[in-house]
Each structure stands twice: as structure tokens, then as C-alpha cells.
Length: 82
Length: 82
Image: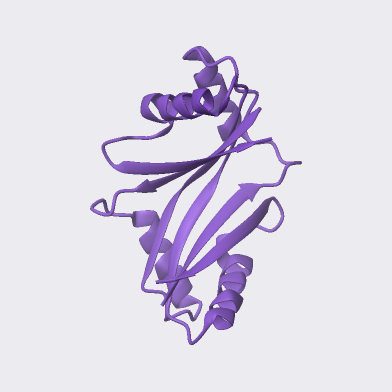
């Protein structure tokens, strides 16, 4: 069994309203030293696969087909055997 | 300048409807080898701080006061100097 930790973030060129809202809230709470906040998704996916490369292929396929919007998002992932 | 990468996940004891929905969608797309999916938030926060320990304290403070719901969520973070 493998566990994929997938980090999905908005592309740098895409506006991040959530991040802006959090930055303003932090500012209102007194943190004036936070120039930027970016918010993304963190997904932990358990996969039963024969070997690491098979698991890796499947994670990429899942991201391309369902988990990530390629127009506005980038992703990276880590794979650990559990 | 420091950059905090904060990973917020639901506690194991808390139901994860988003994760369940994604697991079912993956199943419908043919991935029958995915027993579990958990979805969380991934935040990248830039912080101007004098040193690492000051930055670390502030990240904990931000998480406790705003970024994380301690009743249903856990968090971990990494801090890198940029």
C-alpha cells in the first residue's frame, strides 16, 4: 500500500481571493509582517498498487483527470509506502 | 524572510465528506484500488521575522488564532528561509 500526499496550488498568475482574505484577517489581528498568503488543497490518497512506479503513474493520472484543474492549478506529490 | 508551509487536516475521528466524494468519483472513473482519501488545506505564508524561532512562534500563534479550527483539525508546518 502506498500513500500519496498531493499539494495543489493556484498558479502564480492566478488571483488568490482566499489567500488575500486570510492575509487581511491576519493584518487585522496585528500581523503586519505577512506580505503574502497562498491557499491550496492538501490531499492524502491511499493506493493499493503493485509497485512504486505503478502507484506514481496512477497518482499522475488521477491528478490529470480529476483532482487538479490544469488551467489554473499546479500540483506536486510525495509517495510513501505504508 | 521566512516561508511557512502549513498542512491542515481533519482529525481522524472527524468524517470527511469531501474525501468520501472524491473517493467515490475516483471509483466511478475506474480506480477501485483507492481505499481512503482525506482532503485538507495547504497554506503558504510569507513572514518577515527577525529569526527562525520568532517566525515559528508566530506561525503557531496564527494557526491557533485564525488558520486552524482546533476542535476538528490538526496541523503541521515546515519553515524555510527564502
